[in-house]
Image (cartoon, rainbow, N blue to C red):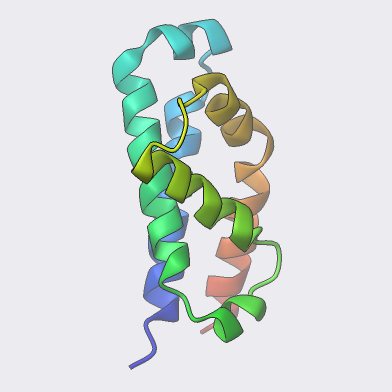
Length: 112
């Protein structure tokens, strides 16, 4: 059973929640809110985990998703390879996730 659409929907949910958590929040307020930062870490892990479960060939058919970066960030956060820089997460949410949300929405819409 191909669960690609379900995984993409999970990615989209996580990305939307991340955008909502940072919406209207200045970087200083974001960094000062430990619970918000921890929630973002978990959502990035969820995003990357769903991405990791998509077959490589299927992933290649979904444009606009930086698969290596999404899964790589998940690995860093999940395994604690280095100290998390929440400012980088904030910038990623602000700069990269709106386009990711659009790409995922477009692909899901094209599936029927």
